[in-house]
Image (cartoon, rainbow, N blue to C red):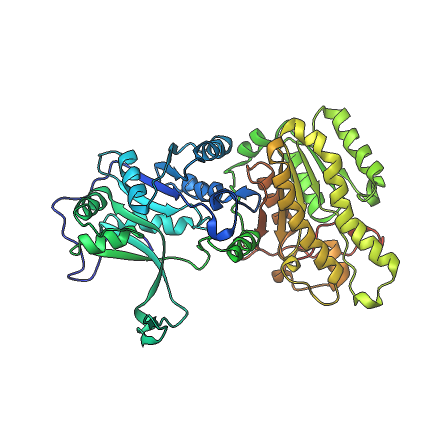
Length: 501
């Protein structure tokens, strides 16, 4: 949806003058205490996908071009913790972190006082809805050009029943007219102020929903409903924590792309990158790409340098070589991996050990050995998974299991290493044209595979980004036709390529 400039006859609200807001303010309501989650801390401070829930939420508004300012209403006694999160994340749009009220009524009034008297757009959003999309923010702000109040909702997939005090059904409303409310709720500041002014004269006033206040006390004001999303869940119950964490795990993080070669060169020149598995496939293409932009890249692999990622002494020797040559290590990339097809019950122990050692023990070993170097440069560790991490597949159970383990390892390490300034991310490419895939599946139609060069470009974008704890999906652009990848003659060469999708 774009800006709502046309509406049906009779539905456009009448305004005495065109709306000219001075700015758009996002008010993040973080007053919950986490009682229903059984926590000792407010639920908005609980970590999901490596970051506190409130940090994920604030990041959405920080990145939204429609938002000029962010104000946080925090639970009593936790303002300092929220301020530390804001400072550490570098959120420039957050102007105030203040204590919320004892009730929703009081919290909204505190927020209105914090916003000030100037005409502006105000979006109220639950801090514990961290999966809000930029699309919803944009459509809410656009709708305020036409409407004075805006809500966000999704259709109800369940039949809603109304019951009496004996828990007997009294009514079953028509489901087609029902919606499940979400946030943000957006208002022209003059409208929400007037609604609360009128509510002050009602001794029975108790707000749980700001649009409800407008509906009750300004019934003449139409409230526009914007389509929400199923992912925009509110973390309220213990199961919501697991759902939100899984949704973050499955979500494709958006990686910023630079505009030209010069921009990449400015970012990459002078950096040292170590690539384990850099002889073929994605690792090789990333090595060549980064070198073209001025990085000093050191590729290591079993076939070219005799480096086994699962051997601590090999990994340490490789890292030491790069460090002694340049005096720094900014990024460490692990594309090494192997795929052995076949039923688990029919695999010999040597094959099982090799898959586990290379695909999981290897990245763990690299992570441990890399940390001291990356801590010096506030650098990044980049791993690779595959689409099979979301669901184990027959005939390559160990491969799927190790790829799922790498996603969990990424999120855990991003949390552990956050205080050290070290970032950890994992790339999830769809089916990619690499020697390893060709060896396992034979020649496939070119138009069905992602080019290794595309994954290499996305990998470089991640390395120069501020992302951490993210699973970055890489998909084949329309019309891309990668070259056919031959199977190397040496049986060990596929170990140096990136994972299949």
